[in-house]
Amino acid sequence: MKPLTEKEIRAAFVNCSKGEAKRLNLPRDLAERPWDDLDYLGWRDPQAPDRAYLVAEVDGRPQGLVLRGAPHVAGQARRSMCRICMTTKEGGVTLMVAPLAGPAGKQGNSVGVYLCTDLDCSLYVRGIKQVEGMMKVPESLTVEEKIARTVANLEAFLAKVTH
Image (cartoon, rainbow, N blue to C red; front, side, top):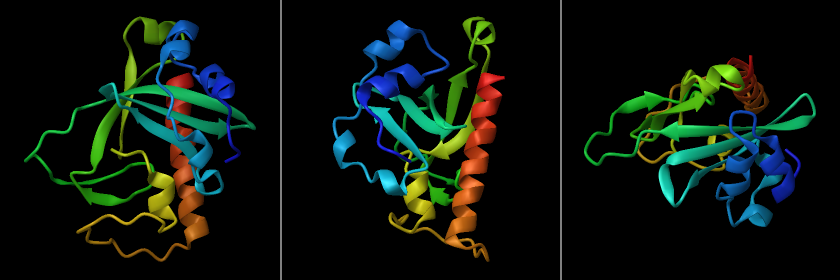
């Protein structure tokens, strides 16, 4: 993914108002992000832990989503699989819910996906970040094939939100 500016990120959101996009908290470490290894930019809002944001490039332009995730509850860890990168983790996957874009979202309609709580799917798929204590599910896919699968899963989720 190519590095995005603050202005590009704010303009990318498809399921919130322009005012909300203008007020959302962006990550402070944008310049330090490993852009070449990212399939999407994802972050949790440090001031509102149940809010998360995701910006991906679709058809050559960035599309962003506002997400709500269940807050982490200590002692309720269970093994789950991220439906974007297909990584299995103990307590590191959260149901993230996105309001639909347009009138349907204004009526309260939404769609959800189980997603890595830290939104680091790209790094797990590439082996840059490891899940501690994870029992790896054996796969015969190459890293490139895993990346392609992650991108396809992400694009399918984005399509559910925008169509």
